[in-house]
Length: 61
Picture (tube, rainbow, N blue to C red):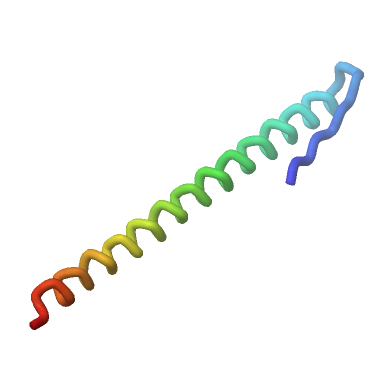
């Protein structure tokens, strides 16, 4: 989701719209970063479980 306002006049509203656009871009970046971190955590958790299971099957007669 990307929200942007465009205003051509140099005014307080232009300042507000610029700040709003910057804030929404920062939020998008943080969301993307959070999704990446969550995916990495999930992959590590799966790998950890696989590592815990492997010895049981290797040493079982």
